[in-house]
Amino acid sequence: MKRIEVKKTSSKGIVMGRVFLVEEQDLSPAGNSVQEPEVEKEIQAYEQAVEDVIADLVPLAEGSDIFAGHLELAKDIALKEGVLGRIRNQNYNAQMALHETAEEFRMIFEMMEDEYMRERSADIQDIRNRLMRKLKGLNEGNFDEITEKVILLARDLAPSDTAKLNLDYILGFITELGGVTSHVSIMARGMGIPALVGASGIMDEVKNGDFVIMDASQGVILVNPGQEEIQEYTKKAEEFRKFEKELEESSALPTVTKDGRKLEVCGNVGSLEDVKRAVQFQIDGIGLFRSEFLYMESDHFPTEEEQFEVYSQAAELLGDKELTIRTLDIGGDKGLDYFEFPKEENPFLGYRAIRIGLDQTSILKTQLRALLRAGTSGHIRIMFPMIISVEEVLKALQILEESREELAKEGIPYGADLEVGVMIETPAAVMMAEELAERVDFFSIGTNDLTQYFLAVDRGNQKIAAMYNSYHPAVLRAIYQTIRAGHKFGKKVGMCGEFASDPKAVKLLLGMGLDEFSVSPGEAANVKYQIRNASADEAERLAKEVMKQPAVEDIMRLLEE
Image (tube, rainbow, N blue to C red; front, side, top):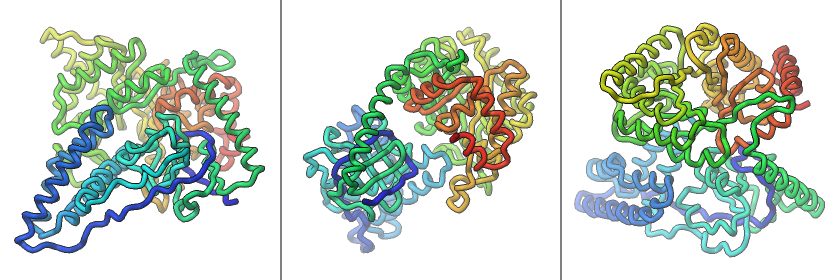
């Protein structure tokens, strides 16, 4: 028997069965260049491939946001011009021109720090592979050979792969590549299929037809186990199913600790479609609506009317539950095709988020007017990102007040009493938390950036990625200090970073006094369950002990006890 441990669980569960190995096709480009008389032939071949791919995607796009996005990519003018430019100007054949252009697009996404945006490079790769198959005259893999229940093992799985699967035959997914926000992860969570992704080297360790036990709850794969292990994990699988059923049945219950403290568990979303899915998870509201995706999915700055429609629809979906919308947070790892950013040596320390809004005030005011108007449709809260000073908050509040006055003069209805908060994600904001709390209505702690900035660690740098740790005493003390500063002035403090859904962190954050946990909607039921089965008094005693510890290992020992 062989035991393999995988760090990235994207969808929990325990299953066992035979492995079906997805065949790898050779989609590398033919490397030859072409002579001038052949250029037009290569152009026609590429244009025909695009037409064929679009025809394949149109029916898929009707019922899928993912494939709708792929359809837009297939039609993308910049991609097409990049390919045709290489054929015409550099005498590339169509395959090489496609490969080089798609690789250029993919690398732009790969360089982004935001994990969700990095995973979107898979969309580029999927379109590239679809087009390359057309150019090479290849079929779409060996999925039609699956005729019984199997655990699917692949280097990676694209949406176009999963669209061809009969999911009745799929017990679980294991991929060598990919992350927890990849399409296969999203699909697996939505279907309740266990999945382990980013299992480095797994293709060399497991063969087609091997019998494996896959514990996606603990990140463990047992290859060709004995009868004793099979019996042990059969029992664990039954216990897990009972636990999942209990989570589902209790998800609509109020989030109240054993000793009576009430909290809120909200969802993080990036679009109107995300909101529609999130409400199915019995969340208490939306703690983070990433409005930048509305901008990134457009070919122009969204107008006031376009934004108003999205924000008001989202508010209506939530009824009287809160909808916290973060103002435009671009720059750093998030760009726009229609906006030219300055060349910066350190873009994460540069022209981004609220800095752009306060410099390009017309962009910010357009968004604020839309948010104010949408405030008549529900409980909308406005949140400013990347704050480092009182001056920034005062200037943003001034622009908000100007927006109110303009709407009043124009006779346009708007929400008069929208709450305004700030993201606490910089060391400066932590140190100025009391002064900020005097001037805003709430805080939301963004642990992803806060950890990176506090520790001066680029989490995208593999050489030092292990140093990126939100359990570092300095980060935990920053969180604790922020919560106490907010509470000193009677302000609610939430958290919308990934740390809020970490099972080891929930009780600790409860003990620190966190009021709102905002997590991936699929994690909400588990966070609620942990809170309902905890004592706030015991959690507070734990937090005080943790705050005394000087090292990560001491903190983890306490939490694991």
